[in-house]
Structure formats: structure tokens, C-alpha cells
Amino acid sequence: MRLWGKIENFLALTGRKVIAFFSGYIEFQHYLKSIFNSFKSLKYLRLRSLYSTVLLQTKYTGLDAVFLISVVALMLGATVIIQASQKFPKFGIDSFIGDLLVLIIIREIGPLATAMIVTSRSGSAISAEIATQKQNHEIRSLELLGIDTKLYIVFPRIIASILSIISLVILFDVVALAGGYLISRLFIFIPPQQFLATIINAFSFEDLLITFLKSLMYGILIPLICCYYGFRPSTAFQIPIYVSRAVVRTLLSVFIVNALISFLFYL
Image 1: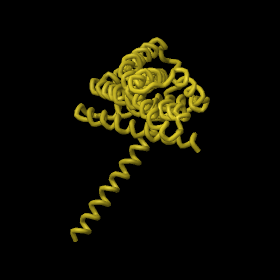
Image 2: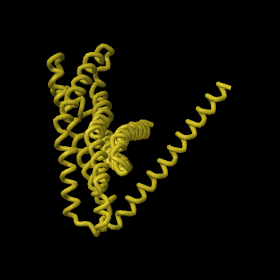
Image 3: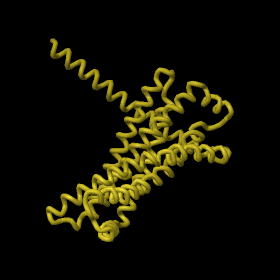
Image 4: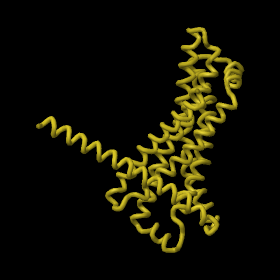
């Protein structure tokens, strides 16, 4: 009887999880549909108000994160370059160092690390800001004024996030390769001309396309998911719960998208 009771509890818990997942999926679909429909009212909004929001969000998401992105890129770039330069010559494949750096830093680490930092830093702030505005009835006030809150709140953050992440990914790649190379010279010596030549020879249009596509997808996903969970809390007690969910599920989505894009291009 105890075993049967445990099985019943397990099935009940699994059923609740499945139902919660599908109900959340349906609600997110309605959320996406409402945003898509809200584009019809774009012409009724003042562009100046959207521009100011985009500017502020770009400053916070992009400019204010430059130092953190640079430090992380510097450390990761130096680590990868030192490891590759020390290990590859032992196996007689030192000519593939450029390919490895492009593959790891430009294709994978650059976009992924940037997206993780933006999610942890700006994504959580977006969710908390919207949830607080909802609790303070600021969103309801905008709705009473006839303003489409989905368009007014979500759309500028998507634009700002796309611009910021693309710029930060470029910064990350440059700092990781250039700064990482300078740090690596403290431990090993690689002629600058040789290092630059290996990077240029390994770099291709496909690498640029993959990096841009990942940056674009992250720029859309991060504010979209974080804004969704920002609208969810119905009480002040629920704000930290949904902020945590926003960060965790955004990071999960980022990893899934990263794997899918890489899988499609590596086939």
C-alpha cells in the first residue's frame, strides 16, 4: 500500500507539472499574440517616448555593462589562448590554433557569455521593474490613458537589447582576442603577425553569420521572456519569485537556442 501511495503521489505531482507547463506555454503564446497585435497601435504612440526608453535601456544594458564584459572577455580570452598555445604544438596541430579561437571565442563563448551576463544583470532588472510598476498601479494608469502597455514597455526593451547585445558581443570578441593575446605574452610568446594571420585565415562569413544570428535571437528572447514574467506577479510577495523564474528560464532558453543554432550550422 505504501508503494502504491508513493506511485500515486508521483503521478499526481507529474500531472500537475505537465498541466502547469502546458498552461504556461498557452499563456506565453497569448502574450506573444498580444504583442504582435499591439504593433497595430504603433502609429498612435509618440516616437519621442519610445526613443527615450530605448536610449535609457541601451545605456543600462549596453554602456553600463562594458567594464564587466571586458573583464570577463579578457580572462576567458587569455585562458583559451594560453591553453591552446601550450597544448596544440605538442600534438603537431599548432596551425589550427586560429580555427580553435574562432570556434570557441567568436562562435560560442562570445555570444553565450554576453547573453548570460545581460540576463543576470539586465533581465532581472527588467522583470523587477515591470513587476514593481504593476504593483504601484503605474501600468494600470497607462492603460486608463489608452496606451498599449505591451507595446510601450516591451518593444523599446527589445530594440535596446538587440543593439546592446550585438555591440557587447563585438566588444567581447575584440577584447578576448586582443587583450587575451597581450596577457598570454606574459607566459608564452607568439609572434603578433602569426597570431593575426591565423585568426584572419580561420575567420569566415559563416562565423560572422552565426555570431550575428545568436546575438539577434538573444536580443529578442531576453527582454521578451523577462517582460513576460514581470507582468505575472499579482502581489508584492510574488515579485522575487517571478524575477527568479525569469532569469532561470531565460538562461535555459538561451542555452537551447545556442545549441539549436550551432547544431544547424555544424550539420
